[in-house]
Image 1 (cartoon, rainbow, N blue to C red):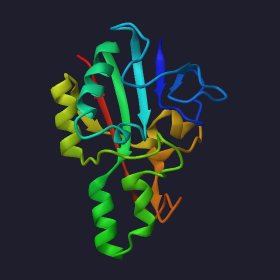
Image 2 (cartoon, one colour):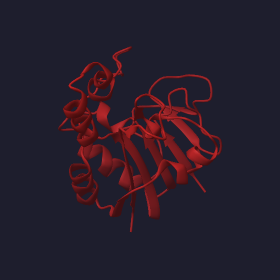
Image 3 (cartoon, rainbow, N blue to C red):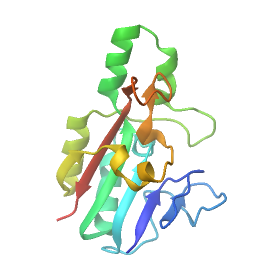
Image 4 (cartoon, rainbow, N blue to C red):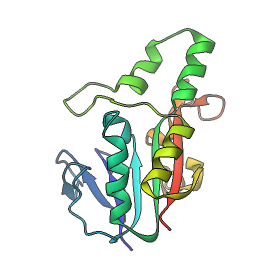
Length: 179
């Protein structure tokens, strides 16, 4: 079973082919996520956390089409990105922008750490369905291998930071399948 962790950065997942645009410890494949060196219909499962928002308004749909083509029939994409609806709700409640900047515009620590797009569930669902995905639904990070292994990533982004009991989940976590 081929599981691919797209845009892994420093969060290396055991049992996955870890792919990132920058080399680093544990990164198996260095490439742009728009040009995966994987055959069509070869991947059972993709996991992408905090990546799709780095692509522009006119790029992200093509990225989904590319990933869809690499998935086997019956394969799945688990995708996490900033939930713009949660960002707006947090801002409305707090009138504080400081905690939201990284979620909306990226950390801007290097040339790859800039956000070009924002999403709510409906927009992301529409893009996934246009690419061919079906059964688009939200998932709970606690029910994933990442959650069960106690690994922390942006699928678990809460405000206040790390308050997973009383905080607001700022991540839009979506699972979709290739028929």
